[in-house]
Image (cartoon, rainbow, N blue to C red):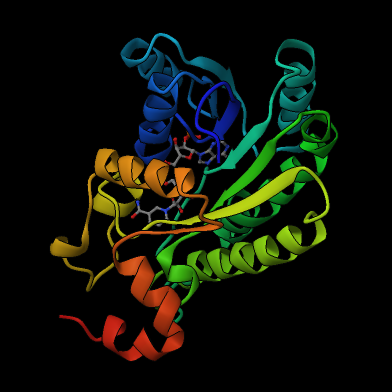
Length: 246
Ligand SMILES: NC(=O)c1ccc[n+]([C@@H]2O[C@H](COP(=O)([O-])OP(=O)(O)OC[C@H]3O[C@@H](n4cnc5c(N)ncnc54)[C@H](OP(=O)(O)O)[C@@H]3O)[C@@H](O)[C@H]2O)c1
């Protein structure tokens, strides 16, 4: 992937992995647009990287998402990179309370919203000489942690969808890339870390972003870092081991 002169949208770019990628892409000479639900978080991100362009959007809300797409078409018609990064993770215990009231939201943010956004932005992406759809899945797409079962299922689903989309778009100028992070020290991956995962597998958002850009520059279709390399290689063979860690 070329790493300069892109116009990039990063969903969920105000914090964590999205912000680390936004900082790095911005410093490499790209226009970076970030969106998220929290205006405060977006403002704080812009305070730390003034070059960022921010836009409030709930990607799981059809009206909000359509408004974002229209705004992009009008104000940023050169958009050539979509990074579907926004995500949430919920613990669900089917022996006590599976918390089904938040189920649809988790599926919508992690799985259906990226697909809607891709479909809505393909006409814009098709206009560019080089364009990229980049979906952020997870090492847990390949071998789940049982205490975040729906989260892992959405990540397996976005992995599967990414394979199909790459196949469908192979004759177009649009490349489809998957980033499968390992455990990254963010609000999602650090503070709300799944029971049983261990600190020595965790990487900082900045180190993660640095290695991600290196792999993107190398032309990888799948960016695999740290433990994600193992889960991708071994898949469900790692399930018992991962879920029995003390
Ligand atoms: N950290 C890890 O260990 C890890 C591992 C594997 C994969 N990942 C994936 O990496 C991605 C980023 O996660 P992170 O670790 O950086 O967590 P994070 O810091 O919590 O970032 C998630 C971002 O998504 C945004 N977001 C959530 N729902 C949204 C919505 N409906 N519309 C727009 N934005 C929304 C949040 O902002 P608002 O709340 O303001 O909307 C937040 O900025 C996720 O897809 C996650 O599944 C993380």
